[in-house]
Image (cartoon, rainbow, N blue to C red):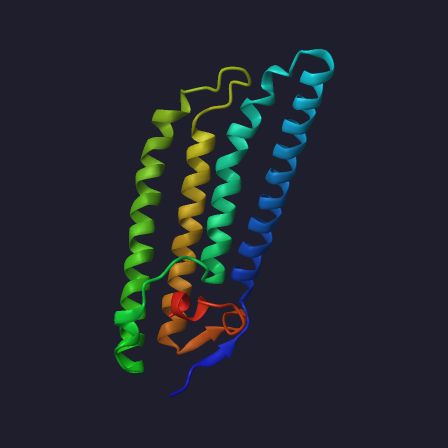
Length: 177
């Protein structure tokens, strides 16, 4: 049975929209704050006290949004020479098992991060007093989204489906199974 090309489902589209918006928003805010603070420093010799802290708080959100988007597109690094040496049936089984293992490991990371939220919640950023749990929540949400995408990839491998964007993006076929 041949692989069927399908479009992203509603969940994948929602993940892409949210992560893309978050990526652009955080990148823009970080740029504007750092640029304004630099200009202020050169013009007046002073700077905004909070201007270093906000980018530090936003940067993990930017990174996790980018990681999730890269995973959705199948753009992460993959070593596939062993998988490519077996037939399509074995390749499909390997993909299913691998994606379920990946989803399970992300699930472990989500649970571990969840358990740490209460501990790091008491840590506060020096100026804005933002709880440390905000950054950890970012990691937890990112890992949860990665687990969901891995489960969707396993489901697609099971059903012999491939997302439409995989065909035109180099390296994406290997990453999506």
